[in-house]
Image (cartoon, rainbow over all chains, first blue to last red; front, side):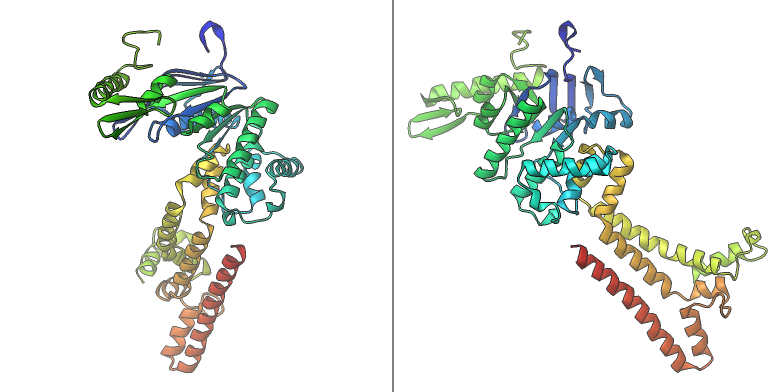
Length: 286
Length: 156
């Protein structure tokens, strides 16, 4: 339940998750609105995949609560399975079962007890969406990386989920397949109103596709500008230093670059202490 | 032999399970062979399931499978290794003589197995017949292995 009684499709409250003693995700509050397309950006190891797994109820966080359609995702596995059936996750390196493409695509439908005729119709529809109709009888393990990714997406979309989670699905694809996937993701979000949460480390892709971009850094959601600063590079050119964030490029002296690094370092350590954004201690509303 | 001995200790007339009246019946032979091949099949099955990628488990979950379907899916992913485990267990059971002899009693047309028949023929001095039975046993084992290999190649 959001403030003022708003029911978000998905809401995370005071989530903390640790791995081998290290806090990998720490989110004070995150609300996902119905029908929107969110991009979760962040460098490798920022906690994007872990957060995605928590949101999709695959992973139980060490602390905090996840609300789906206003109801807290319970402790009982059967309740979580029921909620998970409204969602679909497509993984970065999709795992295709050692069976035919058709068997892979209809797997989720079988799990939901959909009858055979309806399964055939929906599988055909999903394969058509990616021009994969001729692949139905082929062994899934014989497909190329790009084709496998398309099959994985078809396998997710055939379920007509209310939330679609996509984990870096364009990471290992060529330009042609990236364009095709981006087009389909946008179309599905617009035509079916499917809420989509995608992780990516490609900023232009996030801004190109998403209604909202969430920047994740060291397990925390930070303002996008701050994220740009955190992930900026310092390059030395003789006496001069270039600070490049991808959006801003400034030429500074060695002395100033050291000052910038000191400030960023103190902001980073602040972000690992305080909940919410790195500025929370000084500005509680941030 | 130890399985046979233990089985005999439990199944013979005055033993704790004597009331089952199983000793010297095909049931007793089957039970003995079952316990004999159980460790082989269990070990190979555990290895096969462990070898299945964790992503298979995760993928089944993300597609809305409940615990039973997830377990079934993982077993299906390991099906070739599981079949190999069953074949190994079969090989173990089919070549065994001690427990079949002790629990079955080698009764003609009732509990006599290929291996107990070979042992009997050799002890009678009918070496040639014993050898022929041995070849036949090998043929059965080979045929099953070839059949398994054929299905494996065909499906892949």
